[in-house]
Image (cartoon, rainbow, N blue to C red; front, side, top):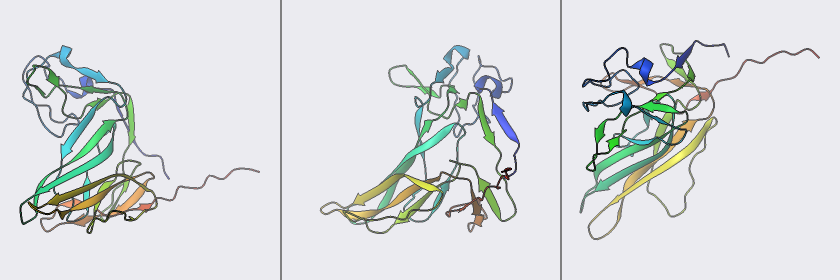
Length: 229
């Protein structure tokens, strides 16, 4: 596999792009999935050690079709959850992914809780993080380890069941839901997978023309290195 261009992130201070920390601002373009209007200054920036920053991200219903999720630099996905409700019919409630940082990250606060404590509810900027750029063509894309995150729905849940394993992927979570007032009915579920090896995935478009890669990819064959005997 050819050497790719590398991106190095030094931390949130360099990624704030000369925006004043002492004024109210939107934290966009800094590895964020949401924005904040909390007024903060440089003393509010917090560094979380490896594994200390754990946040959830709301997602659409994962129980109907394969879905691909965004990878966030410096973080790994560690779980998935979904809910449903209804007395006699199945209605989707909420679902989320759980992420945990694999690198030290610098974070800016998104709000204060009811006790007046700062909450760091968005992705931070990884410190001294090196990430290779993915290759992309008109029909496919190559994902590095941990970058391809997908959920695959399963049919009615049984007390004991078996699920598919795929080359180059590992299971990192399962989500199940139920509904019903007087009896419990299956509300759908899914398995969450993430790639443990570089994979190439086929580009797909939905009816609105949105591009995603919701199917299991093919493991990338690494170039063999010749050695002298």
